[in-house]
Image (tube, rainbow, N blue to C red; front, top):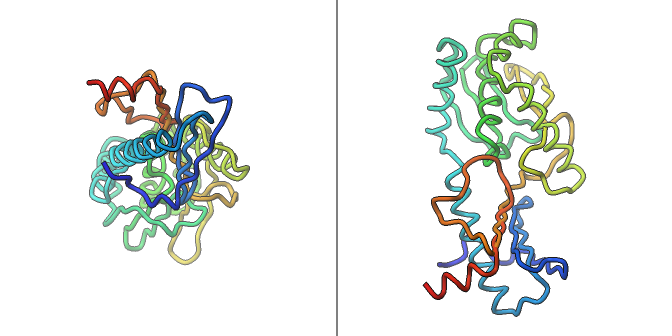
Length: 242
């Protein structure tokens, strides 16, 4: 299988402390692959290829299309808002800056930052509900928050987003469960823009880690919170023999 990314965008990090695992994750446009220092060049090339392929497969599973995003927003509106919020379009956006999402009530359009892709489903649901709520309530008054109170993971999702932004600002690898996002009232008719609390943040980190002795089968890759893909080295040998 061919790598799914330009190798010029791949950074290899060797570590003497790393003995039995290989780890890969995204940092903006780059992919970091951490390998044991003892690896030969051939082993490095093979594991980079394998990890790039698995990262790409995992991301495809986690990232819904615009159509799926619209369908999910409709489900959430029915479940939590009695179907009253009816957006005209809901789509992913790459130009949201620090914002997690934005809404234009005058035309019913909702945009969700591409950085939210790969985050846990309940975090995406919160961002969608936040924007849907603004189709019913323009500001952030009591009525607006009463709508979001119906979603049981509102506080946890806000905490996750704040923790994500805090860690990214400091160049740390973002863990699977961080913690909130403040809101900024936009100009003109963009009434709501859920942002990262004012922290300038690089592109979202998507990480995967595979333990080389516990190499998961394709159907075992978790679709839940983003984690590290860590592979056990012994698995590569067992796959070759099978």
